[in-house]
Image 1: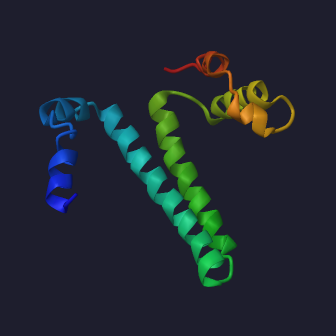
Image 2: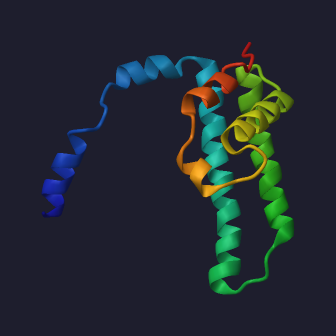
Length: 130
């Protein structure tokens, strides 16, 4: 396959409902969630980049930088939680409840592969959104 054929085939699956996208983006809440999502991805990438430099390039592990990136991740999580009307504590508690349902008291590969997604979803739906 040549690149022109690939691009033609690939772009046929692109969503081009830009008017619908623009209407949805008029929701300021969605803009805040998008900002948080992009920021989380960016800061997560910066965290991974610091690890990459240590693992692959032999640079000293920069724990100060890793801590800063974690702080930046928390900042973007705060925006997302605020927009969704949920508290960190609620998210943390639901996450632990979900993990206990998935693994019991200890991780196993078997339980990781055979999850009860319906039970996990039921746990997560207990979360209160404003």
